[in-house]
Amino acid sequence: MANPVLSRAFEGKAPTAATTPAGYPVHPGYQPQGRPDQQGYGQAQGQAQWGQQGYGQQAPQGYGQQGYQQMPPAGYRAGYDSTQALEHAYNQPSASAPEMGRMTVDDVVVKTGMTLGVVVIASVVSWFFVGTNPALAMPLWIGGLIGGLVLGIINAVRKEPSVPLIMAYALFEGAFIGAISWWANAIVPGVVAQAVFATFIVAAVCLFLYRSGIVKVTEKFRSVLKLALISYLIFCVINLGVMLFMPQTGLFGIRSMEFGGIALGLGIGLVAVIIASMSLIADFDAISKGVAHGVPARFAWTAAFGITVTLIWLYIEILRILLILFADR
Image (cartoon, rainbow, N blue to C red; front, top):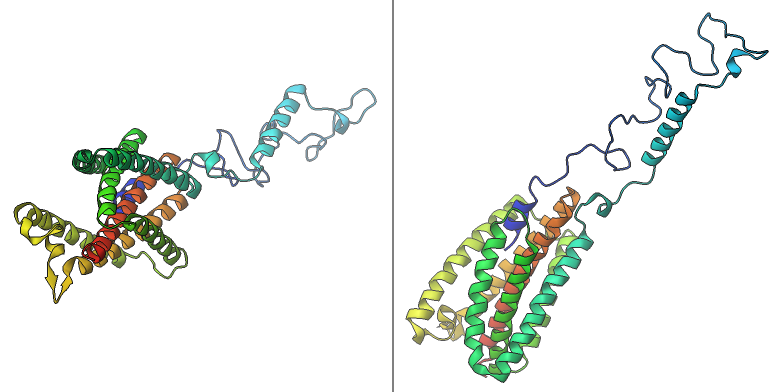
């Protein structure tokens, strides 16, 4: 999933308001200090500055005092002091992204952790219920799958992130993952732990490849990813039809078929893992560009949703590969 969703969500979201060199919003009447064409503070145009005589003019005399020793009127002095205070405020250290309401990497990490936390909790609860009553496996499996699919589409097409909808998606996906993981672990004990470990390893490798610059997200990369996603989606629809109307092919439909004694599901699964990994790298790139462009902080939830979708997809593909490898042994 993902990078098309994140890229579309982040487009045109960068703030456009003018800011000072320190990064704070510009208030009306502000002028940077030190401009050569600037009048003295609180001074009318054409009036000599305090303590200076006009050209060719003699300073008025007071009670035995030189004109240049006179103090400016109180109103002028107050205006000068307030402007100096404002200038001092503008010269403070640059505002950070959180202070300006912009998305940061930390925001994305926290929101992703919260979303994945809901998925994990829902998975554990679903696993527990199925373990105590196996008859609940199919309702949780189908209900979680359909609910997650519907909410995933809704969240993907929304222009603004909705935290309740994203959390509801995480709940449904957790119910689905818990049920299918219990079933997989019943067939091949220990396979779930292996799949979880492998998922995090692949995610870490993807992050390293992106951050190190070994893999760069270019227009060609995006084009290949888009074509691969569409092709894989078409395959999944066809395979679903085979599973429904040709159950004799096996548990995984076309994936269960063998060619030269090797299940097609292994090759298809590896291709799917590569596509999911490319999608995760594209997610990282979209988030990096969103942070650089200063998108609003609320879109950290959109980024968290995109990463969660991709990680769930990656986990399912790895779990299926492990089942194909070890189910008959």
